[in-house]
Image (cartoon, rainbow, N blue to C red; front, top):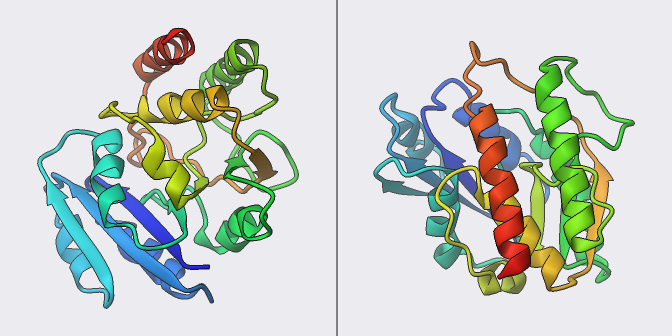
Length: 223
C-alpha cells in the first residue's frame, strides 16, 4: 500500500533534511508532502532540494492549517503525519502502518507513554498534561488511548479525508482524536520512541495549547 507522508514544517531548517533522508530510506511505496508554514529560515528551500518531494508553501497559520493544506494532495492509501523536528523517528513508520496494512485498523497512534521504547526524561508538567488530556479523552469517549496528543498518527486516507477538520494550530490533535473516537473507528496504539526537544532546542507547544486541547475535546464531544 502506498504511504503518503504529510510533513508540516515551520522553521525546521536544522532537521528537515535529516527527516526527509530517513523517510527516503524507508522501503515503502511513498509520497512525501512538505507543507512549509511560513518559515523564515529556508526550510522550504532545503526541502525542495530533495527529489520527489512535493513542497507546498503558505503564510504562517499553524500545524493544523499545514496538515489540512496537505490532505488534498494525498495520493496514497495510508497517510502518516511526520513532524519535521526529528522528535519522531521515521524508522518506526513501517510498524506504525502495519495494523492498517493488515486490515484491522482505521487509525494507528504511536504512543510516547505506553513504555518499552526510548523516551527523553524531561518536562514533568508536559507529561502531567498529556496524561490528564488522555484521561479526559477516555472519560469523554470511552477509549483507552494513552497518548491522545501524540504527533505520530497513521490513517487510512479515506478516513482522514472524511474528518471535518477546522483547527489551525496544535489543537488539530484533539480535534482529530475527538472525531475518530466519536465515530467509533478502529483505533490501535503502539509504543514509539520519543526524542523530545527543549524550548531552547526549538520546541513550540506550550501550556496554553493544553487548555485549548481540553476545550476542543469537549466541543467535539458535545457537537
